[in-house]
Amino acid sequence: MKERLKYDRVSEPQKAQKAQLWKTAIGLQAVDGLQTSDYLIGVAKQHIEGDITIDEAGHYLREYYKARDFRDESSERNEEADIVSQRITKILSEGGFSFTPSFYCGIHRKLFDGIFKFAGQIRDYNITKKEWVLSGDTVIYGNAADIPATLDYDFGVERSFKYRGLDKAAIIEHISHFVAYLWQIHAFGEGNTRTTAVFTILYLRSLGFEVDNDLFENHSWYFRNALVRANYNNLKKGVVADQSYLEAFFENLMYGGNNVLSNRAMHDIHPLEKKATHSGREQTILQYIKNNPGCSAVKISEDLNIPLRTVQRTIAGLSEKIEHRGSSKTGGYYLKL
Figure 1 (spheres, helix red, strand yellow):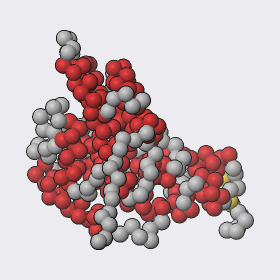
Figure 2: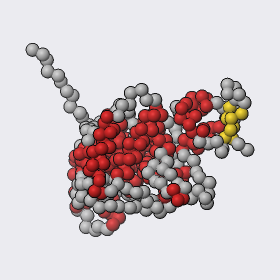
Figure 3: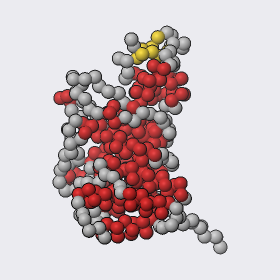
Figure 4: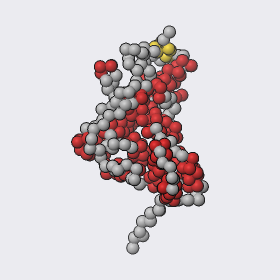
């Protein structure tokens, strides 16, 4: 008789892993301008130390807010941030994943059940939102009536996509495009970015990436702004969608890149009024050339751990700022005077 295959039951992460997941979950609240409470920090520490389970952490948070006599807008926002942080930590700890629209919607339901009446439900109305990074303008989000069909189509296309043979730059570019478009559909009335971030982390894990959770802890606001810039077009102002900011984030997230992630650099500026700002990767390369005049593209690639193809493409877009001097073999790049 063949021996039955044995599966190990997934247990809770160790202390360091739990601490990272909590930091990620707490950091993600910034995408909607929310902050967690001091009470949440205490509960998180108890879970990290192993004194309580993740479910007990959720129970303590619910009871804490039920017992409060005074409720105002600030405390309600704290409650949302605290409870959603615990739920993100739980989902990331469990690690289960299915690449389907229903799983994506299920994340939203798990995160916002009892917080939003529409938790897990696709919105049935159209929306706009004033964005700081666009100086008050809005992205054009997916049409409500088309969302179910659009989700099915996008998931189908991504499911059939073949990553085999792609270099790092092409993988980053494709992942950035998929996540940007998924976010732009904006399937949910509220909580869209946090849901997309959790789904993205789980999806990247399923592809074999050990994602750098510090990026979501420290740069969740950048992540949201980069999604905005990747989906914003205003040809009247001479502005086109720019995915480079999001690619810089994913290069850091997936491959340990060191792109500078600056929200200020992303801020949409009317091109006729001021000079356009550069993406994080462009700034990094410009600074490197400034400090290392005469460097080659190969040298930039090696020292900054950026794919050579990406360096060459970025340099081509900086022709107004840098120039190549000397022969193709022995010459190098310099900032223009």
